[in-house]
Length: 364
Image (cartoon, rainbow, N blue to C red; front, side):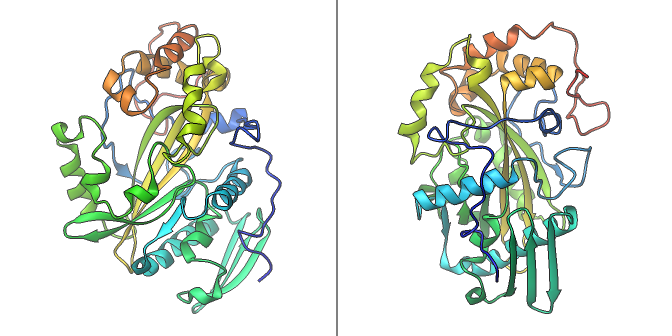
């Protein structure tokens, strides 16, 4: 064993915290490969589930996407776990089988989809894992946690982009049993641990009256291993801050009052969440990853002008109750005002960008 995710001291190019002065930027290529979540000019909450199969030439090509921010995000995760132990990673004792399921799913997917970066060699239960971007070359026994430096889920997800919540099926519903959530938006893993599907979706407006929640649960309970589905979700945030949990709310919430129509282009970020769901084969659990992408309004205008126009229209017509639930009602109007300068009102294509004839980034 040559290194562990915990011991790797990568030098992050980017940072996601105020003390690191938010040294985060997207290249033009990174912006134009985003899973842009607005197929129409008007937005309404829906489950929008579809099969999680390769699509397009961007973020949906792999089961678990990685991009130019991979090393920096892994370093940020290590920082969050070090600074607040017991807050961002929790696994109930009976979830060990699901943890190994998740490790296998992530490592097999990375090795298959990014062979230039990752290699997984198996000899029965004796596995060798090579992660070249992080300088890791480890040998361990699958199913034996004593051969890893930490829990299997913590070990695997310290090397993955996005956050991961593992659910167990129990009493005809899904219950949170484990999570690696250093990129939480407005919730507490400690508080939500053990909640069922209806309970942890309780704060979302309109879900119950629209009947979405019951239909979604019935669909998810019928899912089989090897047939994942996905959806995209979104919100807005101030600064490229990945971690906006309940526990750190006093640190980041005041920033929302500093946004103006003049500075919204640089301060406000669209937070896109790609959410593929996988049924796990041995434990019958389910993993709910949230792969988060951040892009400033100014970056959208510069590198994807048609997406910026679509975002303006979706925000301008947004139900105020949804803006309140998503936590940006304080600067909603400022974001709309800033984007309006860059929308000429021309018709835009409909459909997600990864489908034929869907909306594309625009520009050259």
